[in-house]
Structure formats: C-alpha cells, structure tokens
Amino acid sequence: MLAALSTSVFLSLRVLALAGLLMAPVGALAYSKANGAGIGKQGAGLVLFVTLQRQSMT
Image (tube, rainbow, N blue to C red):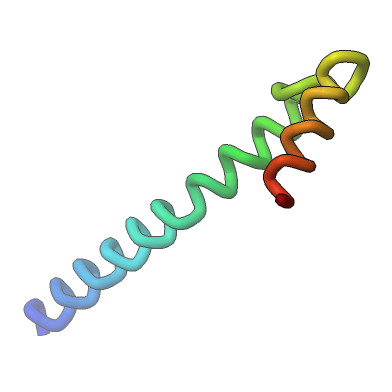
C-alpha cells in the first residue's frame, strides 16, 4: 500500500514538473506580450520589422 502511494506521488510530481517545463515558455511569452516589452511598431521599428519579415520570406 505504501509502495503504491509512493509510486503514485512520484509519478504525479514528474507529470507536474514536465507540465511546468512545457508551459514556462508559453507563460513567459504571454507575460512579455502583456507588458508590451518588444519592438515598438512605429517609425524605424516598423521599417525594421517589415524588412526582417520580407527577408525571412525569401
């Protein structure tokens, strides 16, 4: 009984750790978008953004 409970807890912790590792980049991206940290899409920033997008498509 104790061995089964221990195995279950260990498996649950592994699943939780894996889910955390997979969700961390998504959470970081959402946080950065919410704060507005990034290239401002005005003036020179917009020109740079469009130029880089066009170069990546060719």
